Length: 426
Image 1 (cartoon, rainbow, N blue to C red):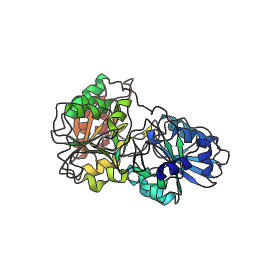
Image 2: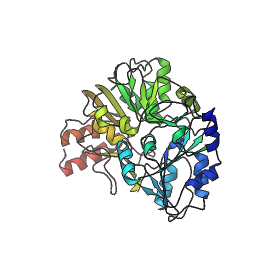
Image 3: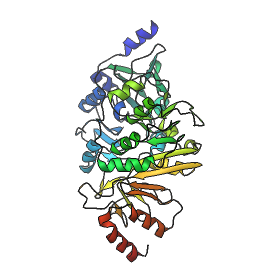
Image 4: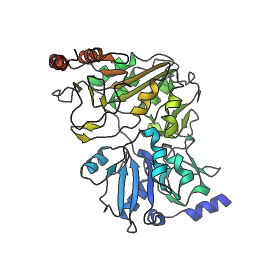
């Protein structure tokens, strides 16, 4: 009864809740689905903003122009909305390894205001961050104030993503459908890459995988595998298929045995329903999900990530397209470094061999001007295109160069070979 009374005392509208934010306060929102839509809308309309900063990641709403002396927006990983706004200098980008964000944010932001979308309260007085844990859960005990937006559609998940009502300053009740990724279109190139990647996976492997057409293509080939485990940063829809086929048991891991782990999820309504009160899934903070020390303890571990272009040295640019920032490092560097420490680790970077119009090779002699190195030449392992697999770890420069040319699009192989010879790589 006391808890119900406390709950009702803290319920207010989104417009009133944002009035708790004072000039100079720095605000942190969870990644993607964890972003609270009503509070975000109320925030940009709040006339009391003055020298405030909002930290966001993979925001699912268009960036609304707000004067920078009122609200500075800092993204930690660009998506389509943020990408456009960054190019127009409406927002800033904070470079990071995903695993290090909790530490970075604690250093940059001493007393944050946390705004988050959560599941309804349980009988013990806890809200769940639902699809999320990410960096947000690590900052709960350091927050100046926590404002939660309760959504009946947000799944209640288990793990280290719980917030007690005693920690909450304000509660906004706002029920709306959760954002969904939509079903990716899988091309013939994706299917070929999926087959090539599946050939590198064995029964008993633990996998890390993201979302998109290629990961879905990979999953199609893993349904008959057995005793797979999941230790990932993002939990996508395609993993539900592997659960239903009996491929995932998580029995081959030294920790979280029998349980899949992730730090956030983004998918369809089917995924969110699968997550709801599912004891086979544990949400953990990103400094654990992406911890190199944790990853190193996994014996059979396979990481699968995408990139934009790869040069003859094996350097991967996964962030810049045509000289413009497209995304950020995310967890690619975390898993790329961690998998090299596993006894039987396989780090896979995948990409189409060309751009969509097949006019430009994505296997290149050297990274293009203004590009960045996301995965270094010393950490790269397998590169996979629709034309095959190049195993670069422990290879010389000439061996790497030839292996990459062999999986490039056939129409570019002669040109790439000529350039490599001129550079002294072959």
